[in-house]
Image 1 (tube, rainbow, N blue to C red):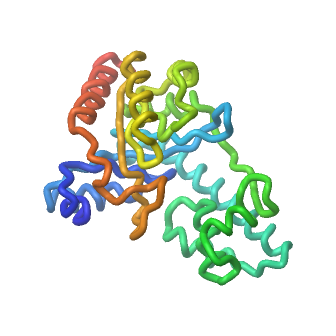
Image 2: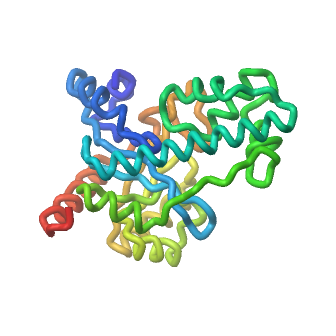
Length: 260
């Protein structure tokens, strides 16, 4: 939160993958430094092209159904991580699971943690090499991720009083595809993202407005000191406060309608 304050942010959405564990500390620090924290989470769901990331905003803490869902998602990630390490070991790459889990620092484990562990151990010379040699789809250590249906997650988010927003759709965010996602329960579209150029942002904004969907944006900052094309520095995307206000109004309207 100190970084958010230094970047001049009035608020920040914390949306770690498959966990809300960081929210209490973030909210406490946010109150101390004057930065609002929107509680959230990033889910992975099935999509026609494989995997869609879904942002859940305004999620409550301590909801048993939500926490049970997230716990199982993290357990599935742990199983997948173990399977990838086992494949690497069979390929003659001596990587320990403990090294991988240490890179996750208690968070939801994913391929990036395996890639960083490979880099730390000197088995690859770059983060990207870990994917094109071992971890990318179709590569020898790839393991398919078990993914829930979109409707299962949007229903869960709505039942806990939150909103579900489709993240960084890029070129997949055609009007036809977004209509299909809307039928699956999304409330909005992440329009502003480091991977979206000006034309993509304009197209997504037009489609979202046309379909009366909410809009959001963010840096997708993962704490990197040198963010790449998919992640920007914290505060680097300049998201209008009006977008947050519109999402809040949508959330309040949904709750007053008796669906939360």
